[in-house]
Length: 60
Image (cartoon, rainbow, N blue to C red; front, side):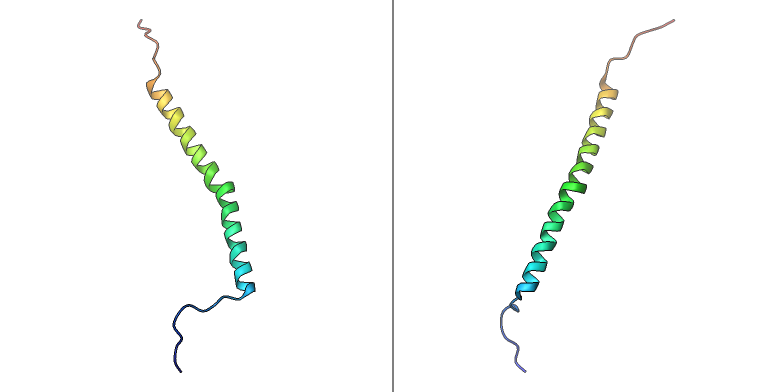
């Protein structure tokens, strides 16, 4: 048998499932990735603050 050129046309069901998967991925970005980046950013800020703050000069 000959193979036809081009990609196989997707059915309406496949298209709907693909859209649902993309929506699920977008939801995961908001629930997992963004909070993770926020926590990493805050940890870096706290580290930089602790390393650059002036220390008290108490010598006995």
